Image (cartoon, rainbow, N blue to C red):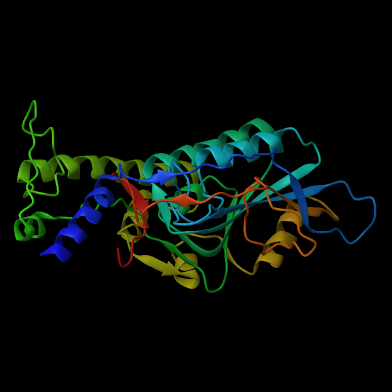
Length: 322
């Protein structure tokens, strides 16, 4: 009985997302530029900016138990793009993507910031799927001029998902009861301590259908030459694709390794030579194009969050094993 009660007590804040301690970083610094691949020649000013898009795409940042990583948030991407706008030596941008996707709002916000950046600066922006480029990560890739994928990369999972845990049977077993006082029948829609009504399921389904339609419309808006709506619907059933399958279905444009994509981008931007740079990495003598992203803060403090504490909501995300 006591063991079950402990499980329930831990599960309730996990579900609601309300109970966690977040000790934010006390020290911060401006975004810094690091050369991750030097040009072959001397006195080369042109640059290719490599932006790391890794991990879950979120409105709120990292929720790991200890430390913090450079979560892919609208704030993170917007900060980088703002800095890039001011550097006249940047001639092209590559998004290096390794993400299963994330929230609907964060994905759509970042994607539109990328499109706005392209329109404002006139610079070409390319996506390179280095490992995973699924769902919301593909949403971000869509407005890019070209989508590359690593030979062993995975993409697709085009669709929307919402998952709600159900604790009713566990609560009954340990004698826990959730008392709800509400103004209307659906005020506690999604309550994990009771069965969901068919009407409530229809409400959620209508929101998911709307977001799914927005996803398809966005791809069609950004990649009209690559596909048509009828063809897109046949591949956008939520499944993932390997690199060859994605290329055959015109989800991506080319299969290659990162160094080949960089060379391709330099040629497309008519640069004979260029430095490949990135923003926000902690300074390192051995930084290179495969370096993991790091936040610009020099001091990391502990974030005490419950692992897996995902907020309730709608996601453009591949969720295997959730």
